[in-house]
Image 1: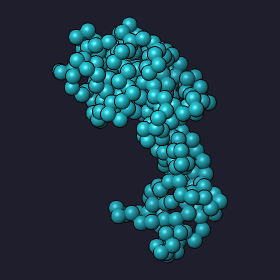
Image 2: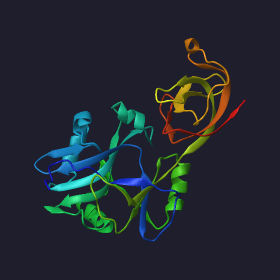
Image 3: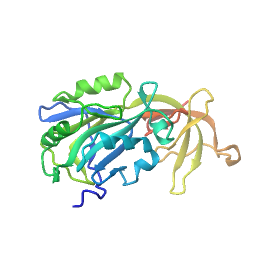
Length: 269
């Protein structure tokens, strides 16, 4: 395996529910871009899908002075606005501070570590990379108490928690159950104010904040739903009366739109 070539990252499944175990390591899940950092003859930083992150964020070139040569580090790139992570600022490449959160070491000193347990790879990371610099930090975590960390993450309105078995090997490009994520979700009631038919069948609801707010999401209507009366396409599919909808979502964009949203329940008003 050529250490200069892109390695697709290992991925986590979503846990059915949070859990505690002395065999698992828990760390904050940050809302950013996955970053695979290769430092050999020169610095390369790949996104989750193998795109060149240095081309979009040239300031990350400073990592060349932080990460030793002949090293591959798995990390998350996070943008910061007013002391908080901002996925919107990251997407728009705004000139705000960026910080790389390193959490795994895949290769160092001309040796691969993929076959080693996570506990050893993390120890390798801590030995090789400074715990903190202006552009990079090594993520800290806790052993055994994921539910407590999740509650702290929820209070600070962060994205979630990553849980990793201490004996887990690294399997590139694979979603594994030895890495799991606990996601912080929010639930809120909104109005479905319009409906438009989908090409694949069924309907799509336009979700707005009551009363009379702008559309903040377009979500598939529950299976089997159909309008009680004809909908006028010339009026944007406006419903005769709004439908109250409880939506579960993970976060909002700067413009107020819902991210990773889905309908939990609904009722006619």
